[in-house]
Amino acid sequence: MTWLTVAALIVSGVFVGFINTLAGGGTIISLSLFMFLGLPANIANGTNRVAVILQNLTSAYEFRRKKVLDFKKANKLAIPTMLGAILGAQIASDINEAVFRKAIGVVMIVMMYFILTKPSQWLKGTEALLEKPVSWIQILIFFVIGVYGGFVQVGVGYFILAGVVLGAGYNLVKANAIKVWIVLLYTPLALIVFILNDQVRWDYGLIHAIGNIIGAFVASRFAVSWGVNFVRWVVIVVIVIFSSDLLGLINIKEFITGLKH
Image (cartoon, rainbow, N blue to C red; front, side, top):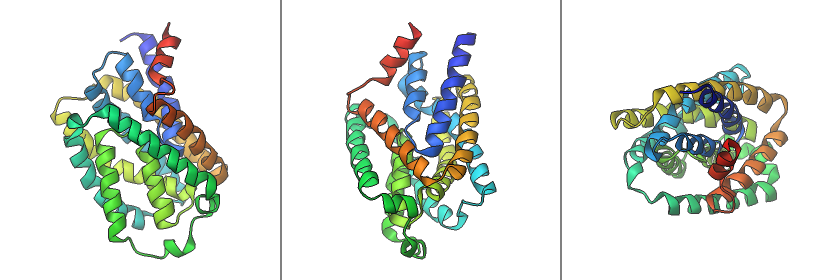
């Protein structure tokens, strides 16, 4: 492994950790870079989970220290997500990823519509929902989210944010805290599945994780000090970029390749 490769893994990790902590979708950068460096898609998918775990461990610690993480409801939502993630990781190789990516791109655009047209819900949360217990519908929704997260991870943060804000009433800062905790709990289960299938490149994953940790640390501190409005606009910008890649309007992998040359 060359020093250029090491630098690319760490620097890209910083951006990925920052984006994933505040919103989601940064994993497309990780997967694109891993595949550009020669890893098959399935191994890139498994390798990415190493950095995701360490990134979210850092973020969860910071959110807990800032006292914005509601463990009680987060754990209830995490259980169905964890079960779904195991299933998603197991069936990862059987799904037509090209069609799936475009479908998720459309969903991203729909989510941006809700962010733009209902800012009061995203910025302030809904007090009435905070007091309600976790419903069976929420359990089902988070199980499905877990299946997707176990399958590919890319953009799963958006689905968790939507479920936590629109379904449970939290504002974006507190929703981000719950999001990173849920991802932290289910990702090791998905990683085990990839390990058992020999689909993890540990050196790439651990080096990339160095950058992820730095990005996650910075983002988790800014998310609290800069407030929910800042987080909201980060979400919007990342959705525009991420959905454009999914729908084929831009190609992040080709952009990275262009930088290489």
